[in-house]
Image: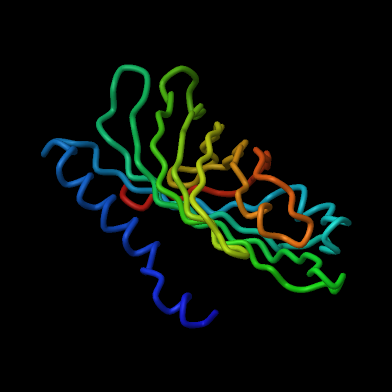
Length: 194
C-alpha cells in the first residue's frame, strides 16, 4: 500500500498551483487584493465528541482556510479560497478493532460574501471541490454558508455551516455509501492585508 501512496501526486500543492494561476488570470490590476486566514473547529466534535467513533470531546477537528478576495462590489465581493480540514477520527476495521483513520480534506472554494448589508457583518455562500484522504479517499464536493462579525479592525468571529459529500464512508469498515454530512464550525478570521 505504501507504493501506491508514494505515487500519489501532492494534491494540495497541485490545488494551490491551480488557484494561483486562476487568480493571476482573473484578478484585474486594481483588485481589492485582500487575503484573510480562517481557523475554525467543528463545534459538535469539540464540545460533545462522537460516541460512534469513540472520539472524546476536545480540539480534534480543525478547518484552515485562506480567503483571497476580489473587487468590492456594491453589496459584497467574490473570493476563492484553498482550505484544509483535519479530524482525528477513528473507526472499526473488518475484525471489529478500533483503529485511527484520520480525515484530511483539501479543497478549493469559490464564494460570494455580502458585506455591505449590515455594518461589521458578512454573509457568505460558497461551493467547493475537494480531495478527501481517509481510507482509499476520493473526490468530493461541498457547499455552505458563513456569517462573520468584526470584533476589532483585523479580526472577525466566523461561523460556518458546511455540507460535505463524505465519500470516505464508502471505504470504512461499515461500508456506508457516500452521503452529505453537515458540520457547524466556529472560529476566527484574521485579515492579513488590511
